[in-house]
Length: 136
View (cartoon, rainbow, N blue to C red):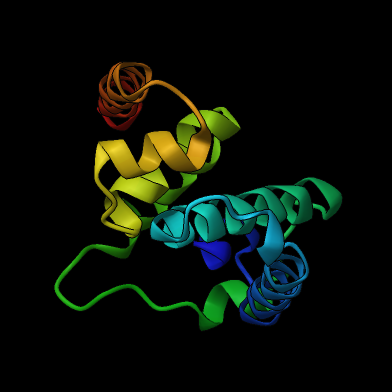
């Protein structure tokens, strides 16, 4: 999840480390231990978005060349899809990334984002339609 925002392995590891430190320092504020996973995802999501906002969106050419596309897929399609996702509103990006990259259920996403599950569902379907138009 962190890598999908910062697009750099080392920066993603830093974000994860910062999230772990923050979670450990605030673990006493966790009200319900059953929600530990969604609580930590919320921290990780916030830290990832903060890091993304703080840094520039420019990726050095050397790093772009090192990224490889999955076998059997057109690299251009992959880049277009990721580029379209990156152009979305941060809340829309979060829903897409949590649902499809982290394989979370809509209820879990709603808990992570502290929103109504119906809001998350409508945002997901609206964003998917928007991505479909952008990719057409």
